[in-house]
Image (tube, rainbow, N blue to C red; front, side, top):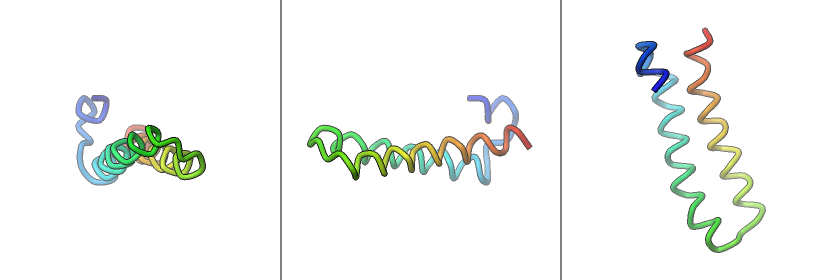
Length: 59
């Protein structure tokens, strides 16, 4: 939402959004099956996607 309000919806922000969405979709079945290490790695990828969305807002 903040990217839309700031008018920075393309580029790095959009890439981060897709990475975050894909990681969260992958995370759900891994969480449901209880795979601990891979679950943490996928969660970290989703956090990286959030950080990619934050960069255009800050700079």
